[in-house]
Image 1 (spheres, rainbow, N blue to C red):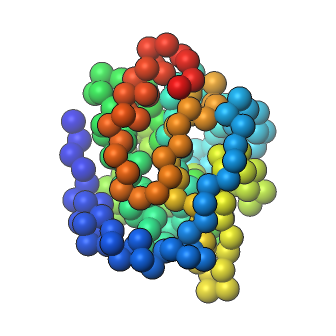
Image 2 (cartoon, rainbow, N blue to C red):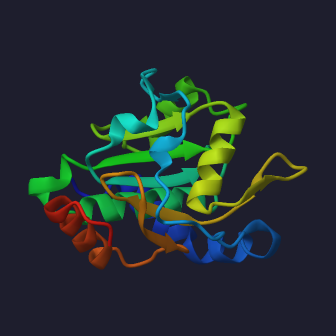
Length: 203
């Protein structure tokens, strides 16, 4: 079992309280309402990951998917969000972990090119199988965010106010679980992913 990357762990420990303080108020947006019966796989768009590979979201159907939305220039909260996604992924039983994909989708379609995302993945020690740091056209990112209930807006300083959310999709691309906030416990959600794998049922 891969241990928690050192950089992510130190970032989480060093910045957790500071991030909660700096990224509140007009910087943190609450999750919006969603329809858990709708599948994100109905979105017809092309996405490119940090390896330069192109996908449609339906390429990930048939297996649980963890989705987190972030941007690369976020140094306060997004590293913790990515760490939370890793914490969930690493909490999944080893026997089924290889069947779970993680999609880390950037808000910053202007600056977070596939090359930038590759550097980000390598820096965070997450250039690993089943992890996809992804970008697309701005309209496609907005559509995905709306379906997930992730709100975001670009500020005058170039940073983004956004929802802090980790989402689990079932095998059909429907929302099975949303974990809002930072440093949330992930063990029960890992068990729900195991149930999705076993039953193919939305939790």
